[in-house]
Image (cartoon, rainbow, N blue to C red):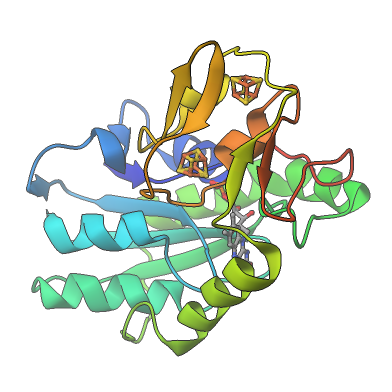
Length: 238
Ligand SMILES: Cc1cc2nc3c(=O)[nH]c(=O)nc-3n(C[C@H](O)[C@H](O)[C@H](O)COP(=O)(O)O)c2cc1C
Ligand code: SF4
Ligand code: SF4
């Protein structure tokens, strides 16, 4: 089976493309079991601040993956950072092993480091070929070695603080431009956005900072502190 987390669609698209015919492919938020058992399990996720998303950390703490072949596939704007090592560490804590990992460079979802349009097009054109390579490698059970490393380390914490303080990432707001279409509320993976009096509103501090809401708003009515969507920075995988 393939499990994934995806904010703006890159990881979802890769997960779907590397899945074998008829293989169960599911987002982590929809998985209720505490143990997942299969002949192979792939974990696909975006890199956040040089590591795995916090939601994936919580998921791998909660769920035991029971499989002889577990592989992790990161999608990233620049590189995987420590993310594969973190997955290996969390699996090892549960007595299992990461057999293989790979990283696909995709358009950056986070606005701060928006991928230039020409490069975006190039990366998306290369996506099917990269997914095909990973599908073939994992189908034959290819292995490489990944050294476990403690998740959510100093660099990761520093980067989240940097985004928080200098960009105002945690200061999310919905502006007057909101037309109440409900897209952001329906799409939020952790139900952090409610519709009140025909307008969207952030309701809890429980945000994964996946950028799905800000990137998918057709009116560009969502702002994360100083981070605003423009023609140059808006990105959502089709
Ligand atoms: C909050 C945040 C932090 C990110 N940090 C990194 C990073 O440290 N390194 C990197 O290469 N890409 C980083 N990215 C870019 C994403 O990893 C990349 O665009 C990924 O493919 C998005 O996948 P998704 O569409 O499945 O959410 C970050 C994106 C977000 C939203
Ligand atoms: S997606 Fe944008 S316009 Fe639609 S409800 Fe959310 S904030 Fe308002
Ligand atoms: S509020 Fe927005 S950024 Fe936060 S988890 Fe929901 S969709 Fe993602």
